Amino acid sequence: MEQNPIFNSKLSMSSDVPLYSQLVGIIKQNISSGTLSVGELLPSEAELCRAFDISRNTVRQAIGELEDGGLVVRKRGKGTFVADPSLNHKGVRYSFTTEVSSLGKTPSSTLVDFDITKASSVICEKMGLQPGTPVYCFTRIRNVDDEPLILETSYYPQYIYPNLTRDMVQTHSFYSLLYHVGIIPYSAVDSYEAVIMDEHVARLLNCTPGSCAFYHQRRTTTEDGRIYEYTRSYMRGDRIRLDVHLQKSGISFARSID
Image 1 (tube, rainbow, N blue to C red):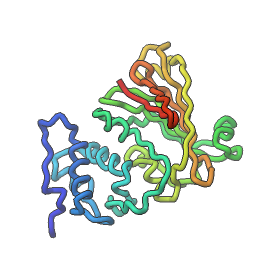
Image 2: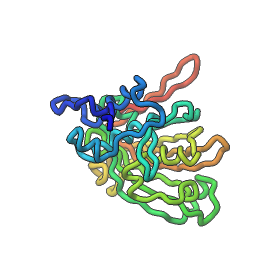
Image 3: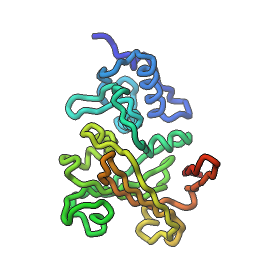
Image 4: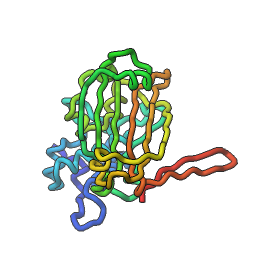
């Protein structure tokens, strides 16, 4: 059997570039050059681990970033395939992994809690749901260079992806899973408030209780106007800066990490 072209490259263990980023670069180069064609099956996680002598978590982080970028798709029970760029839909596209990686930093996430519960009256109001609608609720700590920066809790109605499991949230990009069942982020509304961290939030973010934070809320909708995501987050005020640029053509907004 012909060897997959990905295996023709090597990782540098002495490089300052993280191993997962090196693997991302190798796969990207093979896709952009046409060496890997649309629909082609990538090596399995186990094969990549053996070939490059790296951990499964490193491989999953690399595949997750490629998935967030729309370059590959994962199909349960079948494997990971090169995505068809013509199938990418217009709309908003946010990825914590991509945002942090673009800053030259290393992103990671820690799943704190995963639950399926009935939406509270507050969540129903935020998302336009009927009382008692089952929702997924999962909380993650978003880390940058292994330091906790954001405590994020997200809510999704269960009906949009009925068989979601804790393991899937830990190993897949949920946005990519939704993409393959036709749930595409079309628009989002964000709000930010300055708040003080309580003891619980401060402990998870490795801060002193009473430290400053940004309280961020986001509601994301599909093209037909359905709100399918509500996320609320606490962002460390000592590491995150919000910049607003006023121009003749309008207003632009950026978030940076110190």
